[in-house]
Amino acid sequence: MDVFFNLTLNGLATGMLIFLLAAGLTLIFGLMDVLNFAHGGLFAWGAYSGIWIYSSTGSFLIGMIGAVATGFLLGWLTEKWIIKPVYGNHVQQILITLGLMLVLSELLKVVWGPNQISASPPDVLKGSWEVAGIVIIKYRVFIIAVGLLMFFVVQYILKNTKIGLVVRAGVMNKEMVQALGINIQKVFMFVFMAGAGMAALGGILLGPYSGVIHAEMGMEFAILAFIVVVIGGMGSFPGSILAAILVGLSGSFMAYYVPDLSLAVNMLLMAVVLIFRPQGLFGLKG
Amino acid sequence: MLGLTKTRSYLYLLTALFLLIFPFVYESRTLLILLTQVFIFAMFAMSYDLLLGYTGIVSFGHAMFFGIGAYTIGIFMKSFEPSIFYLILASIVTVLLTGIISFFIGLLTLRLKSHFYAMLTLAFSGLFLVLAEKWRTLTYGNDGFTFRVPDLLKDRTDFYLISLVLMLLIFLGLRRFIQSPLGRVVQAIRENEQRTESLGYNVLHYKIIASVVSGVIAGIAGMLYSISLRFVNTSVFSIDITLDALLMTIIGGVGTLIGAVIGSGIIEFAHHWLTEMAKTHWIFERWIIFFGIIYILAVMFFPQGIVGTVKNLKFKKKDRSQNTQA
Image (cartoon, rainbow over all chains, first blue to last red; front, side, top):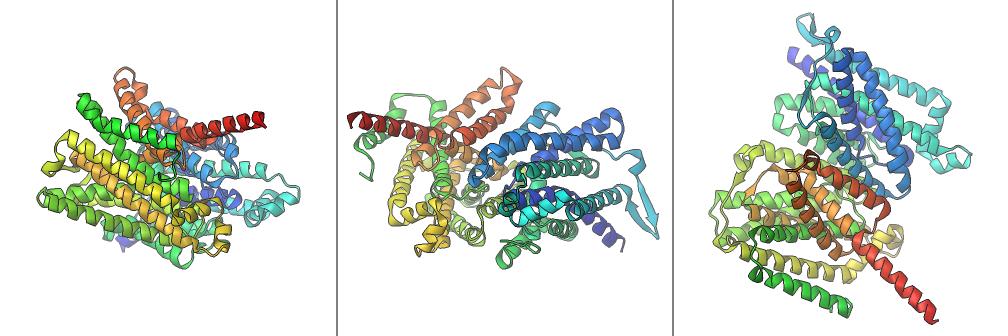
């Protein structure tokens, strides 16, 4: 029972981190058909800058704010300088974001050195609770709480605000939205920055969770996020959280029972979805 | 010959002849090895160009096929004896494996938008990387292993010549493929998929053929790569290998096979040169940044690459001279 509970918690926490990455990807894709391969780079930058601020100020909260700010800034620069010039050309977009990914992760090594950086949770979140004989690690609960909070905040914005309405309409039919006189480029910029900010938040949350951060983790998590986006359906926000939890849980259980197959199972899941429901479990369009 | 203009086929022929006699007139082991690498990566980049430049498919996991080839030959040479028989057997296994895997990946994703193929190949090459790390009894994990090669491939000059001839054969073969009716359909798909479909062609069918041909050639290049090093480790599955192919194709010129060869030459020599430079200044250790920036700029401003840009200039010149005559 103890093991089962811990694995579930672990899977949920990982799922939330993947969700933070996948949410941005799926919305950016849904709105503009841009598949951002540099998203993992933004994630890693969030982790490095956040942990750096955290260790120099001593406050995890400031670290988190710093990470999100870095995400916003990089997202803004990326959208303005990298994505916009090749707008409308799919092949070029895919190629250019991968190039950016490369530059971002190498720049990390230039700024903070090629070695791993260790990180530990702040004192408040260290240690664990014990409830009825089950050990619950505080930091995991914290990640799940932040992930859920982000989900509800974004869901609220999507459902109850003007800009959310425009975003949802844009995902369904962006030509129509443009025809109604709405500057979708500006909305896209907003979504891109928000997505980058969420990815960066996921990055800093991962730091104390895994104990160390390194430049390659961006790519590792980006691959998981791609799997999640495919399973959940491109452009579907609720789909991304459900698929992320699914992938997180299956990863954590598999890593315990059949460690060698943990990545393979997620691939298999994706392959099955691609065969039977290529638009994803919750996708609207194929 | 093969649809080339006369001057160009002479130019190719001369270059090929020059490269053939090169090892006998100029003695430099480093340069010989470097050129062999250029040939091997030229094959790999050409196979990538078939996808990106001719069919319009973006793959981010081409390293997977390269790695399968590299590991297959390594495992065969290590587990059995390094003889010609096992070399041939390993080649057959490589062709089969890469063919089957590229067929299935193509079948799964090529009927969807281009993003899916890019993502799925990226994910699958990640899977193979993990597999190579975890299956320690066969792959010796991260560190990889060394192996002996058949006597035929031991001499550097011989291996240089074999790689060169194979590259030329693949170049001519791919040219033939592209100019065949089949290749024309593939190019039509790149230009306008919907129109090709409405002309009655089964688009998926042709895309899968291109993907399989490309995968198999990449596998062959991978085999040669690990034979040249007599060593294989998990780096053959890394994203860097795919990026090399991408850079070579984009910088050389997309959709021109010779561009992939030229790109391979440029990147391999730049690689070599920048690694030397790393001794003088630490920033050169991070040379990937320069490549990344050049790559981004190339995608933005020179999407046609070197060969494409030169071709365009030529066309413009021709236009101008025709205009003045008229």
